[in-house]
Image (spheres, rainbow, N blue to C red):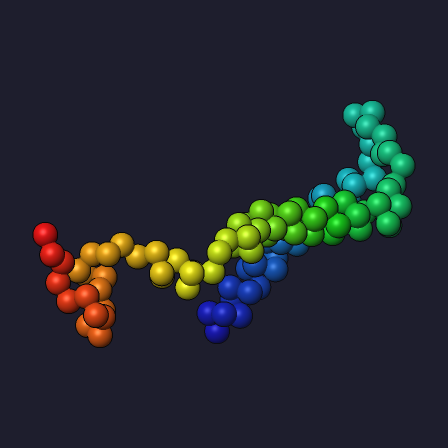
Length: 97
């Protein structure tokens, strides 16, 4: 019952706020004049094409360094010769000083 009451309050308040806006949508009293409407292709370019282009450029800028970086396995061979990094099966058991 509470859901129905909440939904009805929402619908009535939405209706009360939207009716005056719809009633005065074509009433021009302050001198504004609408411009020429944009063609559909231009709208698609502005609201679909440009956001996709921005997302593609951003993803390229984020992913490109990973594409050109050496494989992480190649860096494993560059570990310092520290006893902490020496494996147990290594021939070098202790560091002579």
